[in-house]
Amino acid sequence: MVPKRVLVIDDEELIQEVIQASLEDIVGWEVLLASSGAEGLTVAASQSPDVILLDVSMPIMDGIETFKKLQDDSATQTIPVIFLTAKVQPSDKAIFSQLGVAGVIAKPFDPMTLYKEVSEILGWKS
Image 1 (cartoon, rainbow, N blue to C red):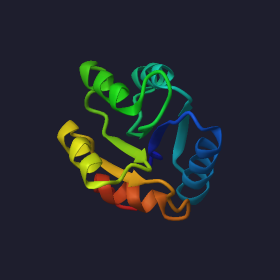
Image 2: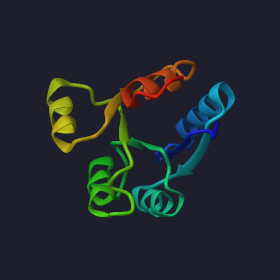
Image 3: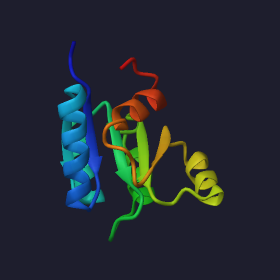
Image 4: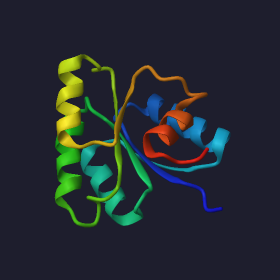
């Protein structure tokens, strides 16, 4: 079976490392990394990941703006996006659901069960 390919777009290197170690070591998924929205758009278009884990709070281009640009590009608009965020108030969740993201995973998350959360949101068998 071909491993899932996950693109992580997050400006915090430590978060990238934790997610990469978690998903590669526990379930053997391939993890691609991008440190900014702009870099993430380039990687998403060239690598066609199975899912994008996208940080909402980033400098220059935040996650919401990045998500909108992904949706505007025919090469990336079908890739499911899961927001990673500490913003989990009802008002934030309402905004996220209106955007049409696949799901939201709250920070801090448990690295040992992150793959389960991603799989549940996307309906993947883990």
